[in-house]
Image (cartoon, rainbow, N blue to C red; front, side):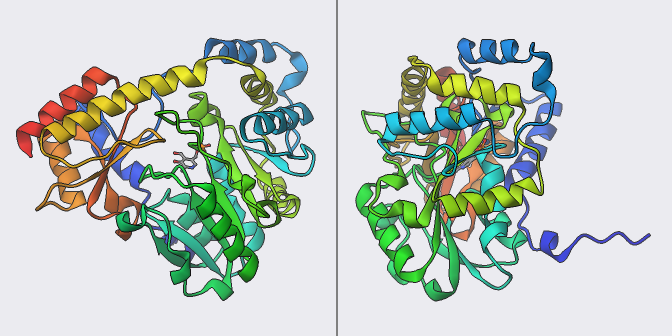
Length: 385
Ligand code: PLP
């Protein structure tokens, strides 16, 4: 039989992290002491009270059945309460909140709900890859909004060419991979642009809780009129070190939420109920967990950035996210530099170009390894570059 993959799959760029994982596994199998600054996956476990909540929840004999597609009401209520407390935004837990099997799932499915083949989706670049792949699956025409250093890694929306054909746009602050942050003035401009052109805004706030030096990101939904045009994606992954649990949520405009829920009800059958119960406890419980992980990442950030600067790189300290977006030293391109780091220094880092052509000239390093390993990474880099 002649098995052929679909045109839509053929259109996808290679999923960068899979490629990097392959190279990393090969190097590890060859016995190398790899320092992995590649994938953004917290190295610490979730706090004990969340693990205990899950252990208790799975004891209930009735909890193992299919979950509601739209999530347990109790979990939705805990999301709305957390949101009000953290951002001061009111959400109706029944119509404006939708639990997701990780925010990636919702982000990738979103265009299927609102984009027809040939419609335009506005995608920032460099970017988290599912903005592009989800749009390609929906048959969209992608217009890239480059995130340039001279614009503080914010898209210049006045330069968008196909605003009238665009149905949806992705925005992401605090940003992966650039670690840039955005304020309300920028969010207000995006809302005004979206209202004028009838574009749905999907703001990805997966890193809103990872922040330093007293900086606290705003929710996109605090912008004037945002709820008329936008939904925001959140994740328990980075906030509570729960990446493997697969739990996140979308919230905001009820019609947009309903569209995404309709796609999902045809594809998945919800998040395991025990995870939703533990997720509700994660959001409802006052603890010092977030302050603790932020202190830890901040110490790592300082070790890596100060270290790189001490060997002649020019890197600034991010205010949020656990990524360092470093301009590659003169004479290198990002792919070659990442290749040299892996081959000559046993360090995995992600070339900026892997997040799209606009990422060229930078390399992304994560803060998900201990300070001592980051210092060792700097030492090794200093020896070869
Ligand atoms: N959004 C951004 C910008 C990310 O970097 C990630 C994960 O790395 C996600 C969303 C997805 O997180 P999850 O699917 O675990 O909620």
